[in-house]
Amino acid sequence: MEVTGRVKVINPEQQISATFKKRELVVTTEEQYPQHIMIEFTQDKTDLLNNYAPGEQVKVSINLRGREWVNPQGETKYFNSIQGWRIEKMQPEAPVTGQMPPMPASEAFEPATNFNEEEHDDLPF
Image (cartoon, rainbow, N blue to C red):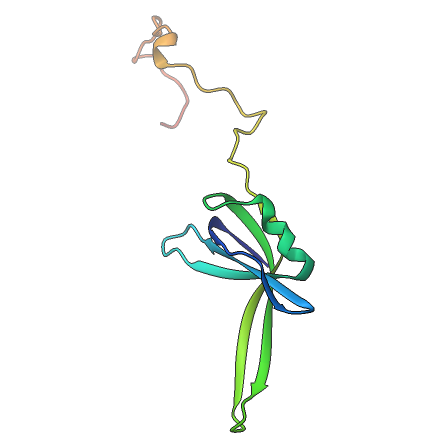
């Protein structure tokens, strides 16, 4: 799955335990109702965020993760997280090469001088 949008926040790396670290990124989608999506990068993937800054357009490849947890009272709880594993800068859309050239202005054409409305043609309109 992928999330595209503009970088809103890049948090500093957090050392959660001796063997686990994470870094959070918030991407704001660009749609009618923008969403602020928090994406976690863990372990060696935290370094992927070093070359990005707020305001940049990005595409982030993600995995959805879900966990089950039973609290001390015996109640089962469920948690979801969004884990990023790749991030790319989005390039501004460039004009596509090989497109047709723009149409010349109508003033570039001379008006027809041999036009006669009374001449019959076989066109149906």
